[in-house]
Structures are given as structure tokens and as C-alpha cells.
Length: 306
Image (tube, rainbow, N blue to C red; front, side, top):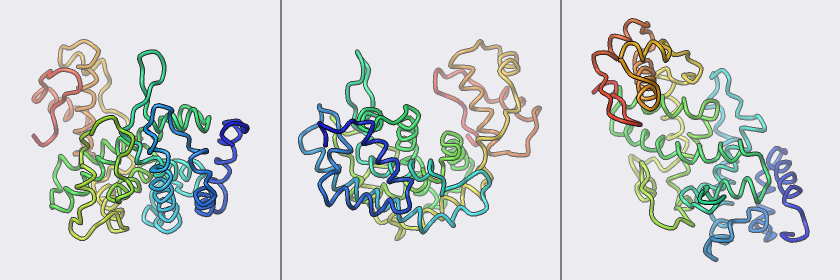
């Protein structure tokens, strides 16, 4: 199948399986019939043990994601703009879970560039669109941050910094944030241990820590409910739709800065303040920014609560 069937055809058939009525059975058949490795073909540079390891771990995680979608979606009832039963949501959640063990693996892409192994599988093995690969990469980046936020919740750290952390996750994922919560719950599973990476990469929460039984929670429904409840309680569940209270020109004028990284960091800082104080107005944000802003370089910004 890997040589005589086009990758486009394989991707089309898999898309139909995931969007169909029983993706769980489809994944089980791919695994038991020995087709998993041919469908989710990894990059040639991968170690020879990676395909089999992904087949074992990925199929288990994919089936767990199917169980979540069929039994846990009621957790998110009442959130406007979210439809976990939609084809896109199903595809993002299941494929994101299935490729989760590859989240730290990097492979050659073009010239001197690299891409994630997950992106290679999506773009080159399945011939799906670039936006699908970007969505999986984003889910893999944010899921450990959500797992770290859950650990903070278990420690009782419901402060401004945690509110900002969860708000940033929701803002980045937009409508995909429930999928990110599902994947964060899967990170504690033994099957989610990273494979295929050239060297160990430190996450916000290491996989060993994710696997520890903290407060009795091991990626079960309780963890999903705790994250959803905190996001709803903090009022950041739809923050990706909020309009900034200050525009770029106003920020540059107030701080005496030009565009570029400094402006981006300042705009992000304003949004952080909005996350903690959702009822604030333009003047309040502007006063806080002037009092707290220090240009610390690219990617740095004052954290609300510090």
C-alpha cells in the first residue's frame, strides 16, 4: 500500500474514517491489520523503531481521544462557538492525540529548515492541508502548558498568573481549546512518552511528572472538568474574540517605542491585563501599562500580578 496507492488517496480515506460514525473501529482495524505504519508514514530519517512505537502508542492515544469525544463533550456544554461534534474538531482531537508521542521530533523540511515529525505525517504522508499540520503543532505546544496549569490548580494557586496562563492558552487555540484540554489529559499516559526526538526537550511539565499520580488525577475526566471549570470561572473561555482596548498607535505613543518586538510585547501585556480585569476600560489599561512597562527585549512583557 505504501508504494502502489497514492498518499492523496490514503489521506482522503483516513479523513472519511475519522469523520465517519465509528473512528474508534477504524483505528482499531488499521492497527490490527498492520496498516498503521503505512498510513502514518514517518520521515525516513527516523530511527527504525519509531514506526512500531508510534503504531502502538499512537493507536492507543487515538482511541482514548475517541472515548473522550463520545463521553466527555458534555463537560463543555453551554460554551458558545464550540462544537466538539464537528468534523474539524474530531479530526484535530483524534489526530493530535495519535501523533502526540512525536511532539518533540524534528525532521528536515526544505533547505536549512526543519518541521515537526507530526507536520511531516500530516503534510507529506496524508497530504492534508498546511493548516491541519499547523493546528496539530499548536495543540502539541499548548497541551503541556494546560497540564502545568492543572498542576497549579491542584496546588491551590488560583491567582492572576494562573488566570493569565489559561487565558493565553485559550487565546492561542481559539475554538480548539477543548481539544487542547483533552490532549493535556492524555499527556500523563505512558503511551504519550516522547519518541523520535534527537535529544530530550524540557516541557512545561515533563512526561515523568505528567505520569505521576498527583491528587489522584491521572488524565481522567476530573482533570478535564477541573481545567474547563477554571477557564469558565476565570471568564476567559471566549477571550480569543475580545477586541484589544488599545491599538498599536496608542501603545507606541504612550510608551515612546517603535514597532517590532517591543510593540508586540506591549500589546500582549495589555491583553494579559484584560484577562485579569475583564471589566477594565481603556484608560485603566493605559495607566497600568505606563506604570509597569520596561522594554525587556523580544518575547518579554510585564506579568499582571507581579
